[in-house]
Length: 100
Image (cartoon, rainbow, N blue to C red; front, top):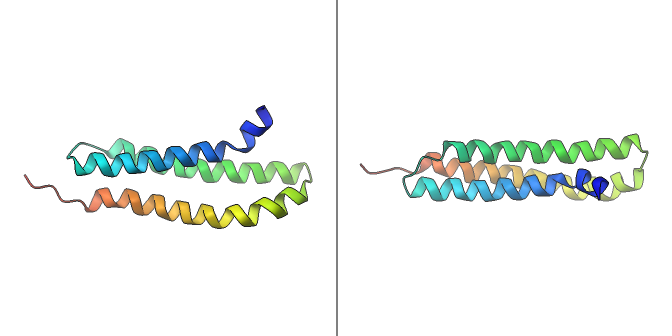
C-alpha cells in the first residue's frame, strides 16, 4: 500500500488542484476573496508535477525501464494539458470584473 501511495500521490494532488481551481473561480464570481484558493490550486499543480517526476526517479533508481517506457510518455502529455488548464482556470478569477 505504501509503495502505491507514494507512486500515485500525483493523482491526489492533481484532483485537489482541479477542485481548488474551480472553487477559486466560483468564489471569485460570487465576490468572495479567493487568493488563498488560487495559491492552493497552483501549489497543488506544482506538487502534482514534482510527485510524478519523483515516481519516475524511483523507477530509474530501481532500473524499472518498462514502467518508464509505459507510463512516462503517456502521462507526460496529460500533465502538460492539466498544468496549462490549471493556469488558465485560475487566471479566470483575475479577469472577472466586480461591479461595486
